[in-house]
Image (cartoon, rainbow, N blue to C red):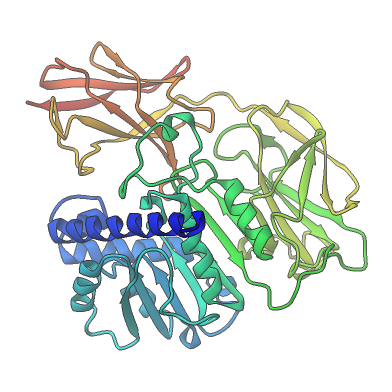
Length: 464
């Protein structure tokens, strides 16, 4: 047996373990393992969470994701459909929805829940490939909250490759992965719940290797990294330029393009450029680089001008928005303050530099938004046992936050967190920490420290 055959057999065995363990979870409490809000969720509560998730995934991008086609004419693949939490709501938008899941038990229950829907098909897969579907058979593919539970980056990569195979030319694949690369996360044992990371570099490599247009990659180095890629209907040109030399026509904060000063840290530390002279159907986040103060940065979005920005640009600049390419990138936290030169580079071409003012906003103390237990995400906290691990949702942290500079104070005890990660879906940081041995039950106070900054204290009731 060749090494390649042996490796595939090992991966198929791991996929079989995924199948067995997710079947067990489906029998125990499928709704909780899909939507870890609370045990024994009502059908209404569970269904409502699916509607919220679909709205979050599609957002304002429905026209872009469908390439301006009527959604009712499109065939959509939902990878990791589970009980059909999102499938029902996707079926209200699209003509045909095909859901797949590694768990046969999830599929069985999903067929019962969605038996009233005539435009939905549900299939059990082996967790490794999509062999039951022919090439180029879907108009849109979505994969949410599934790859983050896969314990092998090779299996994640195999699934992404298979999705790419069954995607039609000109169409879009949007998927979510865990892209954490911190030492703390790498040290955690991976299983079919705490899955492996699929990093930014692996995503960018996949796009380059397959000639994919990497439209966007949000949430890099977080548990919830969202990637959007498009399969080109024809081979891409080597340097996707229009006749004129590229030129920056407009810039501003991504959160509010009318603001021209850009913070170097925090939620608003992102810059958007509008560029004239690029072929928007060919350029992507891999073919462009930003040079900021002689430092090279790769974009997180490159594509058509988004609707919200388009309405602002009309009347503000001479160029029509449909002739512009929007480029969006995050500002590194170690960027110096002051006026800095910026230009973008594509192939051997570059724009003329412009100067942009960067500033450091006053530090904002962290704020505790929720205190949950990490077992079932309820507010029920126990001094010991499975509900004694805290999951704290926090505002005011940034990309510099890690287990070395964040501490949790419970009463008079100081605890080092076991995990810190950004939750893209909620725009909050998650801080996990184990209650210390011997902690007393009863009312106490909880506080978060981020370096020298401390949050206001929040009441915490610890049960025996």
